Length: 561
Image (cartoon, rainbow, N blue to C red; front, side):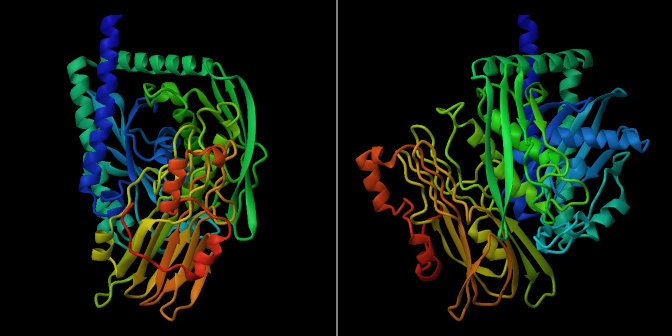
């Protein structure tokens, strides 16, 4: 038993380290700032049955969807009579198969040892542009999937260890930035091949049967840890609802969470129907969000593999915004609806686990998509990033200021990089005044990020929490709502909706003020020295202030959060 436990631990650590090494290789080889600077990618290792064995700790919406995407891909290949062979690699981005949205391009490599299928290396990376109606391929104008860009079912990208030229050219022809896209694609190929090399080194040292036995023991061990954790949780069902903003409409997400000894069931019955807008979240995204929440409630030593993910059951009625029918558009469901699913599940569990559930964070990825033509060159450029905000306060601790939360885990794009590559100049990047929700423990402060265009720029902003503020808990107050606006060179100020598209002319300034996190506990119980510090730092949200900030608050250059 001791030998088996030692071998299992060796294999567990090797699988996680290999996944992390793949991720480092991908990021360092990538061309786009979105991957190279922001690390918008994830890598994983799976067994021959498509069960998750090890994964890098990166993007939660990728992490939770990769296993489902691989199983869907294998089922698709079997259905069309394709059998994985040594030297193959597959590419897929169809959201209804791969599990997120078209920008997330997934590469899957079958790994063989002396002719036997050992498992798969896989990675998913957000490509800045895959064609479609709008710059960066994410636009609220899309009414069906095909309008969001190139749709690739599982296609053989590599055969006998050679890239298939016709597939590479297909991808090149369907992006506004072909050199960048192909550079990122080759980085993904290299990451999978590195993972294959490391996996085969491990198998050759241990032997195939010993490796497989250790993997089975790892999954069983993980499942035992999970069941032990569930046994310590209260049993029962808890419900909640929260809303997404779509123009004047509010789209309801409803959830019932049931905790049992053997696992957790997350039921979305009662959630609103899918919409003719890209807020729909495919089942892979919904599963990823539910998986994320449950994982945050378990002990840190629980490995991230099938032994854990198999303890979560998601019931998402087909045709709803959390499990749409093809060909509904889904680009923003991946980035925004995923965040609201997390908020709703947490809110449902706030009474079940009152000492462990935080107040609502800013609840958005605050997506910024923009592009245009480089002056004097005629070359297209496209840029995508997400912007942080205030984290929700927790029992005994303030929320974190200016941070990405929940389903995103990316970094910011440095100002220097953006100004070097694109026609814009930053005028503000700072924590947002008066944005944190008050409480015994205050929420985190949002971010103000603003730049002035030096050429014509087409911009789309897709965010949330402009109308419904991030909620507090246990008497804590809601954080400030998000604000997006354009200040024209003439001085005119135009407020933007939470999801909007605008053209910036030279001299126009885009201002993004992200929401603050909700507070936790009665604000009257906040320690006086912390309350004084809040006043000095203009941290806490004040009723009536955001509207005045929209038109009169000057832009100030501040410290980078």
